[in-house]
Length: 300
Image 1 (tube, rainbow, N blue to C red):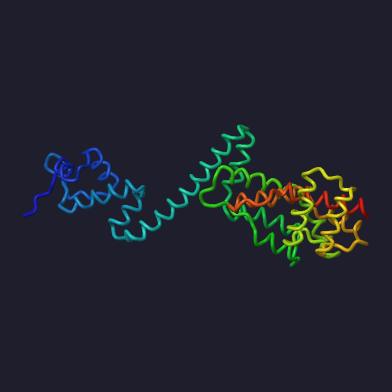
Image 2 (spheres, rainbow, N blue to C red; image 1 turned 90 degrees about the vertical axis):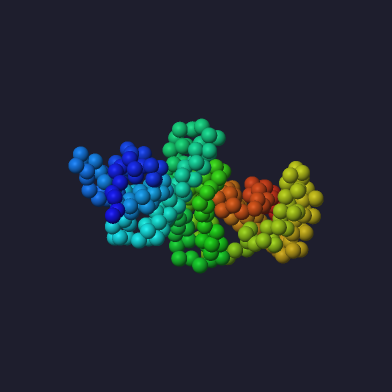
């Protein structure tokens, strides 16, 4: 004959306190087999395993409602565990993001910046993507140009565990993409490229590399764009096919139209958010193109 246990005996077998077992029983997750003549709860032998399971699930953060469903065979333990794991993953992602925001705020120490960081980083991934998509739609529409495709492919995506630097970069980037002036400048550049063609294409790797290697050092060295040394650099670049000599002024105008420091800043921020390997600083690239444009005008 199986003798029911009182709550003290169950506590001794499970290592749980009488108070905890009483709470489980009152919550309905630990069935009571009956009561003694004095009114004390009695539990059957299966209560030992049930109490231990309840303790384990509670330690893992599973709610009492889900535990009740498992014990009543209304839901499988596997399904409940999987659902809870997914919920924990979402919570962990939020906590990691919050940690990165707080670390980024520790650098800025600006209460308004903290609010902006919190607002922009606690958006869902879909909402963050919408900020980028709205910008691209406003600038390019349905245009299938190479520049539009490159920007769509290179969409910034905050990782699941961003650094403070990535959070700060995303906040600055989101503000830039929502800036009407930046959107207008980007749209003018896109429309001009669509109607006039891309030459000289400041995004072309070989052209950009040549300008960076030749005009960049000259700019940093302070060489006068109107000097003979500058003319020699212009002629070397023309020999690479960047522009014919008779189009120097027109080429300079196009460089000015397609060279904007905010666009360079955009790519810097995208690189930080996406964790790309650092490349040449966009500011230095813009400096090189601007110097090249001045040299073209000086020798037009």
